[in-house]
Length: 141
Figure 1 (tube, one colour):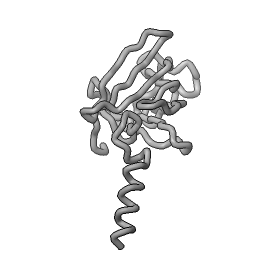
Figure 2: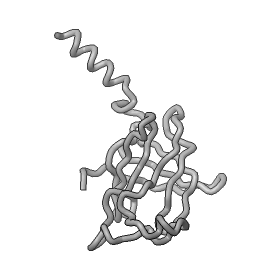
Figure 3: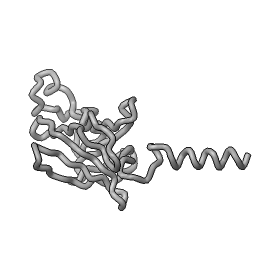
């Protein structure tokens, strides 16, 4: 029994889902402005995918993705929209992904990394120029 507990502890410490490094990005995150929550989970291949799970609005379900250039998506609710996808694992972060900006209806290159203080650094980039936000861990809405 003691061996099983030790083996389980070692496995959990080595597992990416439990690692205390910059790639441990899964969970629910409050965006820097505090106006929304994004849930980051496994896309099914070990990489992170994020979707919008909460908006600070009186009738959040009625808020449409009206800036989306796709006319079909522009008529759909913003809640549940894909916000982060397409990342590749690097040594201490995820990069090569995309982030969707619902305010402009555009998506940008993105990098995400869990910082030592437990916050999440999210970067959106156009060419070599990036803008960073710090997201904080949040309980479920």
